Length: 581
Image (cartoon, rainbow, N blue to C red; front, side):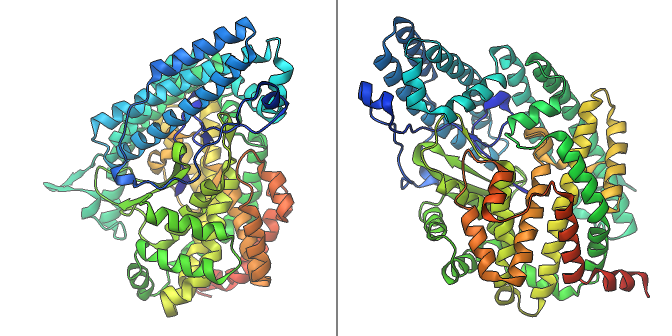
């Protein structure tokens, strides 16, 4: 799975997609005190590999906040708001260096310098966020509240009010513990685990899970990984429960959903998961099993087109159809400034993500090609990359919808089917089939993992064995096979709890785009293009309605997509073929 990774660790280090940046629009307040609006650079040209990391001057940032609080207390509106804008600039710089440290640590998880810098800046983000809430609240309680409201706008105020409930100085020590546990998990996850049989030591690279013996060895190694990594999760549960309770939440799940800015509840997600199990589990299981009958030439065709070859096909597709011009601009910008890093190796973070260097308005893409080998991952991540590229005038408490962001990515993946014949020739149809299976799997696994996390946090005293049994049961229900141990390799559970349901909701929306494309390709591209214009501070469900897509929390939507998949993937004949009838 790929995901959106933002550098900011605000909201108790849980929200991986909020943006600390800058930019304030003109207003009555601006005119009355003659403050210039804060404007950040637009897509600066930088060379990421040679970009210098400089630790931000956090003491100076604290001093500015102190000064702004003093000016507010004195009633000096112009000084307070001028300093506020300066602070937003400084936060922008802090955000950028945090991104740089995080990326360089992900490139080499043995790099202790960047590990320490990443943790230091993450810890300070939580604290600075609390100080910004304090300063913003002080200004709103001052005699120039009305002018400040006019300058910032009510949307900004509403985001501040939400944000201030999700963070507090009381959780700063807990947030530090959380960051340290996540970092320790990442390092432990990158370690090589082995098992021994008849005096021979086996690693994952030495075994073939397709054989009976290989499968046994695979499970032995997975069990060892689970035993080590699962303990970090148990420790994180304890810390996260303390965070939620300290902030007045009875349920950590409710807190996490609020942190992620969702416009649906955990109850909505549970009902959605029930509908998915009813209408899509059988389709997905049949399609997965049938895909095993594909000819050997399919794997050969995939291996013949490495991930980096996707650049040419992506550029050609963007030029050929009515995609937004900004997509080609973003692609050129990424390549010209080397704002991506593809590669593998034992010490590299085992994920793919897109993030942003806020100071330069520069998105960045990271992909571990040991795990993600074909161009579909590039297409997915470029959907995120373009999303970041289109963001404008981002300020301290802006945010993006995870669910919407994943439609940007998964929608582009499926629309790129139009290039598969050129990419894969006679095997294109099978590879499209596999990609549809992967998309259905995103829905099924998204629901299974959200159900897993909801159950665990409702019963936080679960033992590791109980968690493994629960995960085995859920994977059996949703996907037709038992996987007790593999959940510890889903880094989202450790880094961004409750992220995974966004893969499910967005995949359903992406499949609706695909269904539209079968009937009217031009219309589907128009819908997708309209969707890309919704970037920051927008709600998932409202945006779907605005561009003409369905609400996935309407169970009829799940049923309609299921019917379309049954027809297009010929699921009935696939079932009879599997059963030998």
